Image (cartoon, rainbow, N blue to C red):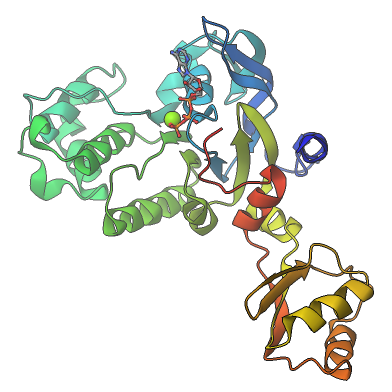
Length: 333
Ligand SMILES: Nc1ncnc2c1ncn2[C@@H]1O[C@H](COP(=O)(O)OP(=O)(O)OP(=O)(O)O)[C@@H](O)[C@H]1O
Ligand SMILES: [Mg+2]
């Protein structure tokens, strides 16, 4: 575990910060939050979110995602370190930065006795830059986008968790934003609702909005995000383009055979590590690039092993995560 952690530490430098790319929309340096009572929720975070990205902020429960987002939005002060959002320091520049940022953070504050639509009227009225003459159209459009048009007259207290999430998202979409910060936006949504939010996020990104969203669902991040960062226990394990992160996880050689013992012996002889057998299925660390897979297969067959299937499996973001943390993703930090 300790050498894994050390290896992960060296991987935190953003690979994509080279010149010629858009300026970062969010950047933190050494961002740290220690709560009263001594718990370090966020520990020396160096995060770089490129402009125009859909950035997935991944981590198991309690890994510090919401705490980070609350610092980025100026809702709580960091214990140490710095954060800039849209190029300006937070929380100092909250008044100029926040109108350009749409945020949905853990359970939006709604007025239960008001309808969904009237909740949006209140949010819109609270925005001094919002033109009252176009209010109704703006609200109708936001309700439409999040799929709440039909339920807009219902009181918010009668909304399901997923409907409340949608209403919070609608509030974040009332005006065009340069940045959307969404904390677990699909929390409480059914699979169809999750798909709708994913396509909405893609649509917003296509319009040029940078979207920063937290999630503990790896496949969700893989489906919608261009970039991702992985947190565990308050620390950043890795960040970068999703394609690079997934590719960095070398898959495992997987062989199915009725002769797994003999196959294991031969593969070990050929220098493969991490060999393990489960029934008729054998897996091993993927061989180095210099080793030709066909040669390994031939060695098995030549040694009398009856091979049913042979190949490299995996190489997903989930594999990358497991390789980094040495544990399943859903294990809390
Ligand atoms: N106000 C607080 N006071 C003390 N500890 C806190 C406070 N808020 C959060 N924490 C602790 O900080 C750690 C990180 O919490 P945080 O809410 O940021 O995690 P998270 O990644 O958002 O988790 P989840 O996926 O469950 O939403 C947790 O151990 C949590 O108990
Ligand atoms: Mg959270």
